[in-house]
Amino acid sequence: MKPVDTLPPRPHLLDGTGTLFRKEVLRFWKVAFQTVGAPVLTAVLYLLIFGHALQDHVLVYGRVGYTAFLIPGLVMMSVLQNAFANTSSSLIQSKISGNLVFLLVSPLSHWAWFLAYVGASIVRGLAVGAGVLVVTVWFSPPGLVNGLWVLVFAVLGAALMGALGLIAGLWAEKFDQMAAFQNFLVMPMTMLAGVFYSVQSLPSVWLVISHFNPFFYMIDGFRHGFFGVSDVSPWISLAVVGGAFIAVSALTLRLLKSGYKLRN
Image (cartoon, rainbow, N blue to C red):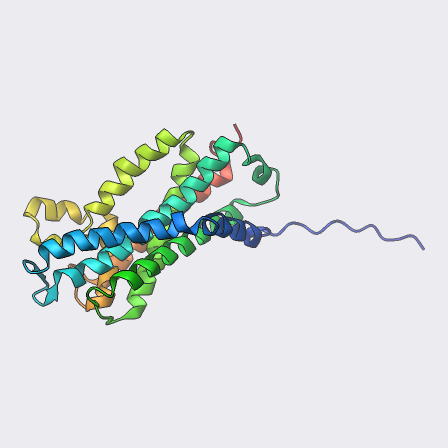
């Protein structure tokens, strides 16, 4: 009796996702002193300088001390910046060192790339954010009114920035271009999103401009989970951040599927 020829199983859309995810997590975790410890120290320095200077002069929402107000902003800023840095730095380093070819010859789908890279960026963002919170909460505990809002905006914000980091990593061909993307887009939008102040204290023109900044909604919604009050409704913030995440993710998946600047 002749053996029946069998076809090899078709690769699944998400095959290899777990392996690539573990590789990306280990990549930053092996140098955790630099990738996690350094951002925590930076946030503590911000808190010491601004908290010491303004604690006795600023009261936010009519009842929240400035140091307590500042802590969630610093935590979320650290989450966003490090989630972006994880995906963008990984791709640009792989391009320059030439080891990206090993991923290109593997049967990884664009969905596997997206989930692995963005998933790892969420892990790094949350690790840094948790470190900042643990260290800074000693200065002035902000309280916790609704932990679910805190978790939702932390995860969604990190995922959005991870996807944006993928776009930056795909577009950039050298570190100078990556630095320009971060210094002229990510950093200004983060610093002008209400990390160090309530946008209600701004002049009317800048108040309107702030409401066009999606980073503002990430930080404001995250802060709502600690105090139960915020500059806008957390549901509005959730809608804006969720919409931005869908739009950025769709663009990222399109670029990955087309092999944009990957197969040159």
